[in-house]
Image 1 (cartoon, rainbow, N blue to C red):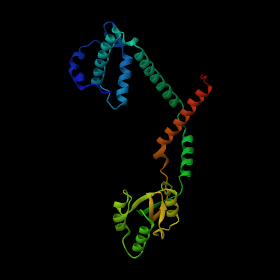
Image 2: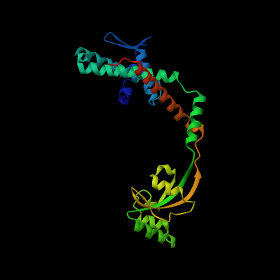
Image 3: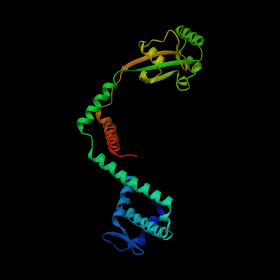
Image 4: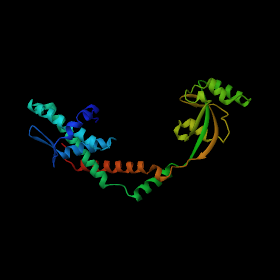
Length: 259
């Protein structure tokens, strides 16, 4: 939510002389606006990045006064009794309460350091292996690929041929460079061929995949180094919290009588 700047500045002087209330920030046509409502809106705005200040508090007061004036008119017209409005109010109320339930659950079920460390160890165990720095040239037919392999073995530049003939729009313009990646990121036929090549070696025969015919060159191989725990702690905590929340929801649904 963004409060209009014009509303903030134009009404500063008027608000400076407004009376102070212990529990209410204003009374509109006999209806009080509780301070707790203003505090909730201020907290929401601060959470969205605004700075809590006397100016923000003044703007919030004016916003809530305007809302109350409009709300009273809406009630006078009986809009709150329309079926569609009742349904929207019910959904909005449910959303607020459910958000509070989720926040309460997450707060009371923060993963322990032991849980986070155990999850991290499991993740890095599964993340082992090697990654490859590859170049490739992709063409439409096997014979063309064989002709290019012969040219490269005869001294032609792999990179220049890739720029000229490769059908891969991503790597072709960069001389066929695929950068560093885990072979599992590629289709099985390509990955299998790449992992059977040594550093500096090029495939002797074209490799066929669903995309066409590839000439693959392995430039380098290195072990995959996982990030340190502190670098990924926040993501791991969030993952565990989501799993706990899902289990909580599934447990409630399992025990609910649904007809």
